[in-house]
Length: 245
Image 1 (tube, rainbow, N blue to C red):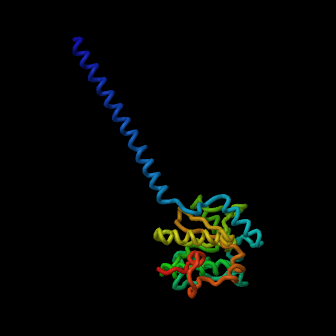
Image 2 (cartoon, rainbow, N blue to C red):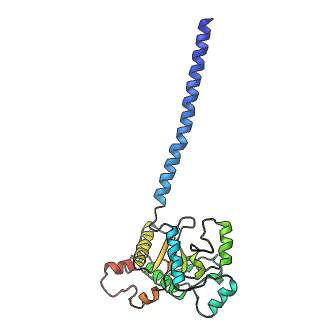
Image 3 (tube, one colour):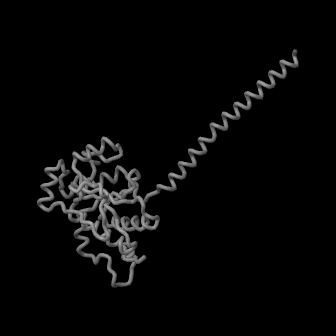
């Protein structure tokens, strides 16, 4: 009788130990998998220009410096188009527009359009491919609606409001670019940012380059020979995209 009880106790202990080991195994595996996924995500997303509160502050400071309005609605938007304050972004061999972008919002400030066209031409000279505009000017009404569906979108008011509301900013497609193309874009934007001409961010949710262009761009541009092709390359010219594929 005592032997039977001993065997039963031993068997119970073995089962409890096995259950504990099994539970431990199941507890460990997800943790390892979680760390692995997090590591992969870090490898996949390590941009040069991370979105930040400070960047939004800088973008709005430029809007205030230029004394530009945050466009409230379609009436204000159409008025700015009519007086030439906003110009249409025109597709070309170096530039395309996301088909779903509302035609009424394919507009931006003149110096922003100059920047996009210059960047597009430099990119085309390097890769024989187009850049894509995913977003340009927005109204407060549109941004408010966007915030309802995307809590990561910038506010429509305050010191961190979206700079799209003033027409200075474009979003350029990042998804689908090769590693080499992304690095080229980052170097180009790094150079422009160092000159105080742009304030860029790389957005993860929509995989795009969000770029606010300073009003100083026109003045700087008038002193430059954009993408010179008839002189030996310098480091600056390489940054500007005069290399060949």
